[in-house]
Figure (cartoon, rainbow, N blue to C red):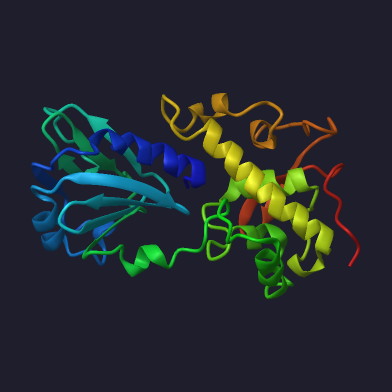
Length: 276
């Protein structure tokens, strides 16, 4: 599933349509990506409206239109945003298309785990404003992280890092990268981290998010699998799926196991599991 930087990558694709009017809306009504969405209102409000701007938060995108239209998109497992020529003939899995004079903004989702939301009004809707403060915002503090870990003290730290209500935008590979850099074993109970380790975890969360946005968001090409060429070999990411992969720091073998319901990679030589 796309994470923070990949979501920003796809949002920037549709930024090509900023400032242009939507001539028509094409969609496959009844598909589950429109669950809970008033598609009649969506078509009415977006037809003739101008795409003003857009932003990302966590794993979601928000597109703001003139006339008070707010379009939310979650890519899910297989969704992607594309920009196609004005005369482009829609493909089977192009479930949502905004037609502009010089282009078409396409949301393609073969497995339909993504979601389209829509609201109309002068301010962003509640489903957007209730998203947790971004990891790179000033509201994401060590004290906030410590409090959250304390309330989930028995859960493995890997599982806790995937909880979007406190770590928005962080997914599987980013969580592994953060824990590897912080030298924290993914199976450590969240409540076992020391104050020093929590400060390190907070710092590495921000660092990985910042670097991922710089190296992935806005790049050309397609994601994935070309994501690999954007990431330096000094990152765990480049080695985590290799059979016989080695830790970039210790040069010792990596391990892959399921932790917290997700396939997890770590370096036993670097990330020690303390005796409880």
